[in-house]
Amino acid sequence: GQILQAGVNYSRYSKGVQAGFTEPYLFDKNILLGGELYYRDYNSFVYDENDNRDETYGQQSIGGVVRLGFPVTEYVTFGTRYSLVQDDISLDEDIYFTDPDGDGPLPAFCDPLKAGRYLCDELGKNLTSAIGYTVAYDNTNGIRATRGHRLVASQDFAGLGGDVKYLRTRLDATKYWGLPAGFVLSIHGEGGYIHPLEDAENPGQEAVRLTDRFFGPTMRGFDIRGIGPRVVRLPYVAGDPVTGPPVVDEEADFIFSDALGGRAYYMGRLEVEFPTSSALRSLGLRPSAFVDVGSVFKLKQPELVNFPGTCTGADGPDTDTTPDTITLNPLVDGQTCAQRAAAPDIAHPNPASFVYNSGTGFTERFLGNSAKPRLSVGVGVNWVSPFGPLRIDIAKALITQEGDETKLFSFNVGTQF
Image 1 (cartoon, rainbow, N blue to C red):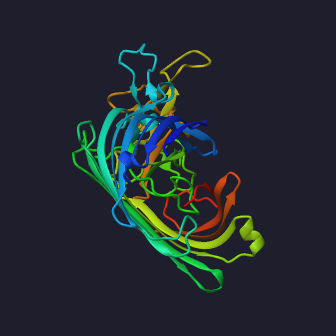
Image 2: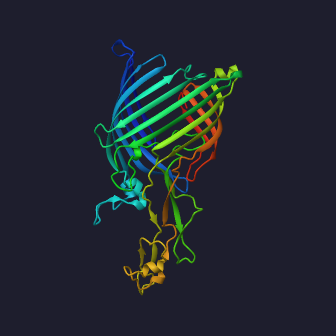
């Protein structure tokens, strides 16, 4: 038979529609031919210092893919595909652009002080034309495997026209052992690498675009996109005395933390599934304990923004009871407000009146870009529910890196974690 599918999803941060068709027995032969068209609208977000979600960039993707696959042997299958996708990365101009109304002397532009240079450099449309293949070996005994192993290797080459050129390689392997007393042991490993086939447009820019990078599989014990390279912002505070140069508050919470993804990743898992009673098995419950290890890394450090802040002072001699004020922006590193006001390009008549505005300054840091492993341990349960296979886990992150975002509880849907 044939498969015709259509779907719509809608949430605050993700919207999309898709439609596809699959013919699994083309020309009365064991050859699969399928295709899919889709539109996806994704809004990335970060948490601010008050744990509120702030939307950052938007990614709209429209495209399609054609697939062809067939068995080579009883356990080996081969598949190939071609995809054509247009991605458009955008920012809310009212929030992240300077003069979004266009009534100033210069046209509206992405402001690095508001969005960061790493996001401003990613804006715009790009067309990706890619061809790929997958080879898989699978001799496991079903979806809830208790023996056998599964090996998958895939590559995608982008550059058959379009605006993007890279080679993406991924490997995935899982081995199952049935142990005495009904225990099942599994070991899983996977990894990937993206090699750019062209240089970046700007010297300080990563050659692989944000939309094409790895953000890693979901490691239990860590939040979604909770590991890997990221840019964080730390606030400046007034020095001592108040009129002195500001200093970075190293103990403060991040103003925000934005995951950037990486060109390489790996993840490993060791898991033991426990035997259960016949009553629990009939309900589809399968508890287990696990250890997860992995990392996302290898990203060129983006150009970071360092903005010590602003100084505010009286607008010269004034006889009014409430003198006008002016703001010096930006403050140069290492200067006091008085020194900045007395600089030749300012030469203010009353530099001593200027003080630092606490809360206006920040500095960006690049964290998490290391192959050193993160590690977590935990317990979970698979449940074959009336709504489909579900997975609930409680995990503790034992090894982290600065900037990582941890998460104790996770919930997943699917036949294979």
